[in-house]
Image 1: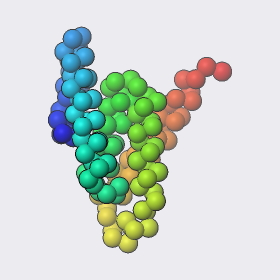
Image 2: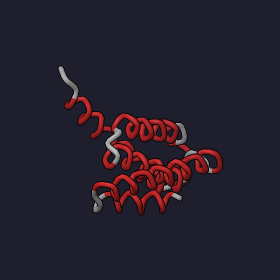
Image 3: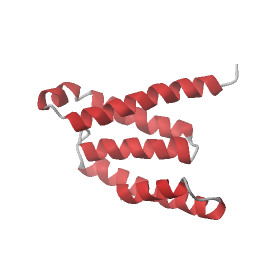
Length: 120
């Protein structure tokens, strides 16, 4: 389901009008279904789960334009993952650590971008 969400997210980047809207719907549906399964069945620090959260957050923030929701998804997963950071470092889980770092970088960038766009 994550890959299906990714496919429709990529299709959003090259589509317009009704096709764009349909691809957004399909991507969101696939990501939400994948997210529900991941939260229920995968550990917080599983690379598939963290990667899904990263991709879903990017979709929500950049493609769908729902910046608050994208930020919220990324922040929640980042904070949940940080609780297991010592465990990850002991296991030398480089894939998950890289994904967590990408979440962190997006959060920093998005936080700055959102605060720049707020009216004074």
